[in-house]
Each structure stands twice: as structure tokens, then as C-alpha cells.
Length: 473
Image (cartoon, rainbow, N blue to C red):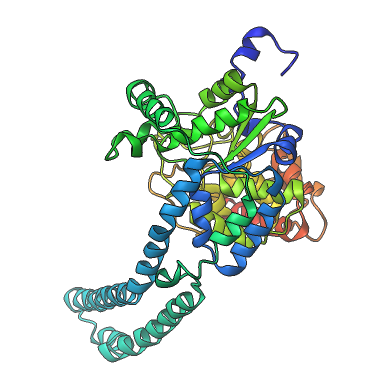
């Protein structure tokens, strides 16, 4: 934005936050920037299976020489690892009881449903044959037999998870598979412990000025037990700023955090816009140090490491990364009207929902995933369509509050639905079944042209099934 007017330059953090930067600018962050991982990213290493952890650590090796560990992050990591291990151990320990409880509830519900239907048959139809048929299929013995098989299958999977869990709370002091790897990654690139007077001043600034004025990061933590605990994110931020100021050659800082829910690092979504990194953080770092900032979630960061630094990360590992950082998808706004072709480009889908649709559709390629994770407005049409079509075709359950989505990628009609729609003949012969009797949305044509065959076939199948619903034989 170097050649833009003073006003656009002055407020560029608010007009074009880091998630919307061009590909070349983002590449420079991955190849040149100081890389700072939040505590939650490091603690997630305890959540991964050993194969996924190995891939994540190998990916971090690609940025090893530019990794820097703030003292606050290191302190929270070494203090928090026992809590993460204990939580996972407790969850796996209680899983068999949880499975049994849910199966018992399901067993009662199934027998209750059968009893209800039999009562209705007796009351309104006097159909003894139908009642006997139900009794022969859904009875106590049959249900017990079926549920016993299901219980065995489920508990076998739980036992497998326990066996694959390679971090035991009792042996973590002597056999921690994560801590030595993290220590080796950082070497001596670690922030110094702040002096007590500096720490006192920073906590005071957070408690008396920043938090009362909702200045990020960390103001949503102000209700914690002590001012020192509440100031954790701000202490990290101050270290990051000071490190950026200390080097005349440092032009970029890449910060990775999974904390997108409380407003610590991300501004909450509002009408027409999803959550985004706080623009005032970009401004503050630039004003105080001259460095540019980029904030990314773990999934988006590791996608970039693969894209720009050729790291090998499988889709299975990406799923683990997303689950470790996952928050439930929720909507903070009410959608009074359906999402349509006219409005889809104005409404950013909530984080995580497009990725859930990606999994539900069985898609596997990295470019399609990147398009679904992209904050760029140009991808919102595709994201909303995939969210809508996977729910419409029963590939996934809609989330509470999810809007109605009236978007199609293709239509079977002899009449062009809009001037910009393209004829079906543009799609590949042998892949699209309605080449002479359909019209295709232009964004879908562009998407298919840059998509590998495996996902291209899946996307066309979804579009064809959706068109079939609108044009039943």
C-alpha cells in the first residue's frame, strides 16, 4: 500500500488486516519473519498422536532459526504441561463409563420408541400383525445383542486410544517426549526473565489502563484470580514488542495462537465480518518497533509452512491440529434472511464451519482446504456454498443458528439463470453429467479449473446432486 493516500496508509490495519494480505506478502512472513508461538500451540504437542507430533515438530524445524520463545510463553508452557496431560489422562480414563452411560440411554430410548409405536398401532389401527412384527425385530434380547456388539467395538477404540497415548502423568518428569524436542527447537533463542520492577509496571499498566479500556491483548482475562495471572497475554505482548524494537533488521513478526474466542488476540465477529486479528495490534507494533505483524491460527500457519517451506504434513495431521485448537462453531449474529448469491460475498462464514464441510464432503487436497480456510472475500461464495450443500445433502448436521443457504453451483435448465453464468459444456467431458442441459456459476468454473481431479470430481458430484434436487425427474 506504499503508493496509497495518507488516509489509506494511516488506517491500513483497519482496512486490510493481516489475514487479507497478498500471497507474496504472506510468503515473506514465512521466509523472513521472527516466529513466535503462543503457549497453546506448544501445549497442543501433548494432544497429538506420536506420528502427528513428529510431523508438526519436523515442520517447525523449517523455521527453527527464526523461532523465538518469550519468557512468559516458556513459563506458561513448563507450568501448564502437567495440566494438559492430566486432562487427557482423565478424559481417557472416564471414557468407558461415558460410553456405557450413553449406550444405556440409547437402549432405553430405542425400546421406548418401539413401545410408543406399538401403542399407536394398538390404539388407532388394532394391527396385531404389525405389533408382532415389531416385537420380533425390536425386543429386549435383540437390542441387547446388537448393543453388546456396538459396546465391544466402541470400547476397543477407547483402549486403542489409551495405548497410543504416549505421555503418562506419573512418568512425565523422567519420560516427557515433548519437552526435550521443544528445548532443542529453541536452543538459546529465549527471552530473558523481566526484572521485578519491570514486571510490576507492566501488570499495573494492564490493570489500570489497558484492560479498563478494552485494549488487547488479554483484556478479557481481567477477571482472573490475580492481576498477574490476568496480565499473561499482555506480558507476552510486551516481550514481543521489545524484541522487535531491539533489532534494526527485524521487519516482520509472525505470531501463532489458537486463542480466537475471548478477544485476547482476535476482534470478535460482527455483522458482515468474521473474527479477525485486532487491527490495533498491527498499529501498536508498527508504531513502537517499526515491524509489521501477522497473526495466524495453528491450522493456517502449518498450511503456510507446507505451502511456502515444503513441509510434509498429511491431512490426518491437519485434522489433529484443528481438533487440538478447535472451538465449537457458533453464530454471534442472527441471520434473518437466507445467504444468497447477492449476500454471500458480504458475510464471512464463522471460522471452522467451512472446514467441517470440507471433511463432511470427503475432500482431501490442500488447495481446496486453503480456499476454505482463507479469510479473503473472493472465497466466501465457495465457503458458503459448501457449508450449505453438505447440510442440504445430509453430509453433516447443521450447527445451531446456522442460516438457511440458498446458493447453487449449477442448475439444470434450458434458460440461463443470470447473464454471467456459463454453459455446462465448459466442464470436462466424462466428469459433468449435464453438459448440454445445465448452467454453471462462474466462481464454480474457476474453482474447478484450479482443482486436482480427486476433489474436482467430488465437488461436481455435490453440485450435480444439488441440481437434481431442484430438477427431479
